[in-house]
Amino acid sequence: MASESEAPPPGPDLSAGIDSTQLADETMLLGHVGDAPVLLARTNGQVYAIGATCTHYGGPLAEGLLVGDTVRCPWHHACFSLHTGEALHAPAFDPVTCYHAVEDTGRITVHEPIHATTSYAVRETPSSIVIVGAGAAGVAAAEQLRRLGYHGPLQLIDERPTDPVDRPNLSKDYLAGQAPEEWVSLRPGTFYAELGITLVKGVTVTRIDTQKRIITTSAGGEYPFDRLLLATGAQPVKLDTPGADLPHVHYLRTLDDSRSIIEGTKSATHAVVIGSSFIGLEVAASLRARGLTVHVVAPESRPLERILGPQLGDMIRTKHEQEGVVFHLEHTVTKITPSTATLSDGSELEADLVVIGVGVRPNVALAEQAGLTIDKGVVVDKYLQTSVPDIYAAGDIARWPDPHTGQSIRVEHWVVAERQGQVAARNMLGAKEPYDAVPFFWSRHFDISVDYVGHAERWTRISVDGDPMQHDCTVRYHDGDRVLAVATVGRERGSLIAELQLEQHTAAEATQEVT
Image 1 (cartoon, helix red, strand yellow):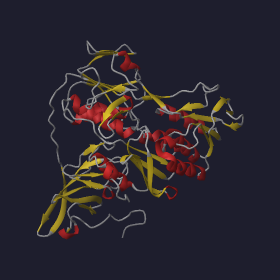
Image 2: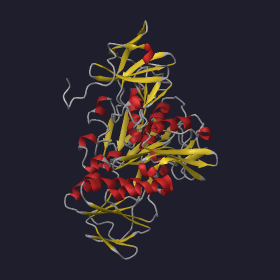
Image 3: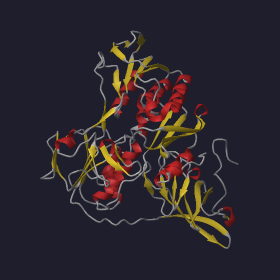
């Protein structure tokens, strides 16, 4: 009998087998082999078995969506191959275990794990590849290049002195004190050397010579490239408010930024967050988790209304207020002292810790120096190639032609950056693969999460199914009869369905209730 701390393995024992009628076509079933949870799936008449736990944050794949011969995780939309267990789309990178499944005489049994391999056809073999920026896009590209079988010189250069980190964690669990620092690294420190990736930390690339194909760093280093990926990301918008340069005033973009804020919480009791952006509100939630009083000051009348609309803006504000966050909307901070923040109406707030989160700007200075085409970001084609052949851009800096909206867009989402890095890697090896993924992001506020697929810079109307205040809803953003984007709360599988509908260019017909 299992102890209270050891839950029994889920579902039927698949090694003992189940009746074939228990698994209809285009369905999944959760079971186990030994103590390992295993997902059994039947699609196109074929039976597959893979590990049932997403390798990103441990999401339950059985609650996800079966799409052809793949399964998508309900938590953050990672995608896995049923054939091999391979992680096909970020944010997961590691595969799940693949098992040998047999259907015979009306029974399905699952046997030992198998080593399923995937072969890649590398069309081109560059003599050397350099990646500038070790954030989401840069790391995803470097890892993908090695996974695809590229064995040539590969440099990953970053201005930060720390190993690459999972940046969404910096404003969420790590900042809240609910995750140790070792969880923040994207990969263990030895990972890059083991893959033959030269990780150059703490130096800035100062010049790109597009004719000689050489980059120069602040340390005087020179690196030749045959292919180059720019993934320089973005930097926080700085305020010139008097007192914004005081030592207790912080921005949050890097691990060192998050460390500094955490250090500040050890002596601070009253925090003021300037800006009701996603980063600002996630910081507010994390500081409340550490027991500080938190005031949010922002010029908008509703938080996040420009991105999520009034319904979800009100929901998020209400949730934060229920957790003790105090809002001062339609206000700005005009002055900061070591102990106070003065608002635009003349009132003062106690503030021995201040965090500014009013947006970011893409780091395009290097691309400008190289003579690349710039338009509110680095302009790339559908293959993520810039105006200079063999130089690519991905992540926060890239403005690409989005086939779903018909517009040129730039999106500052972690998963978008990772997926662009993967596609850029394949194209640097000659794949000629258009980047056509539907944008996705998630934002967590205390114990509720908003999942968002698509892209809607503006809309003509919003339709709501469910009740946002009950944290159970689907919100669609329309341009006439067309659905541009869908946000869900408490409906993770519904978000996957909406993503698939947008991928299939059926947004205009996506009127079914998503539950």
